[in-house]
Image (cartoon, rainbow, N blue to C red; front, side, top):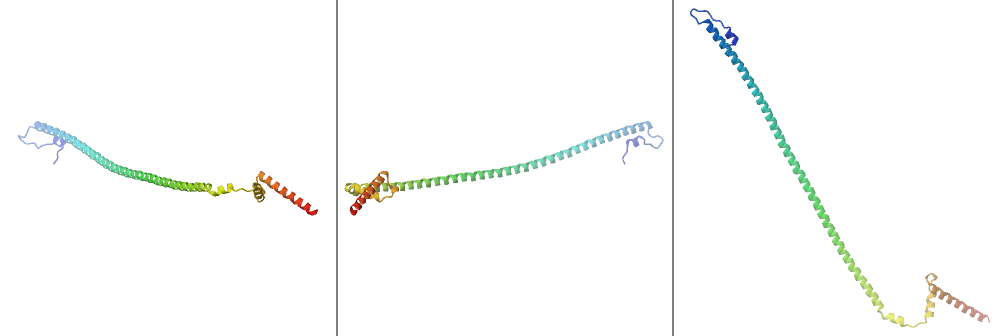
Length: 202
């Protein structure tokens, strides 16, 4: 059964013959009441300390949990960032490699095309050179032909040949000299015809 300081202090006893000295009993009870009062105060303080410690412990647990959660989130974020960075790096490397392959392939293709064009130009140059040489050789053979000597040494009446050639040409194809020769030939013919007609009339 719990006792309060007030109950102890106000406790009364039955009077008995040859009992304890009342003043001593009252003094002792007063001291006991004071001690119990002090102990109760100490208990309250201890309970307050314990409560504060429990509050602090709970706060520490909450902080610890928050820190743990933050660490876990940071770790997850770090892993996600690392994975994203690796993925991006792989994509960048793959893109760079594809671009490098494209540049190399384009260079190879251009080199092949240039080589083909060069070979084609060399082939065409050889063909042109061969044909040109054949043409020059043919012209030289023509110039060396003995028919030239025959033609150059063949003696004809130059005036007769010239007049005959001029009469067969169109006016548009004649030079001024040839036109003069043709006109002279026609005039001579007309004069001869006139003379012939006059003789016939006589």
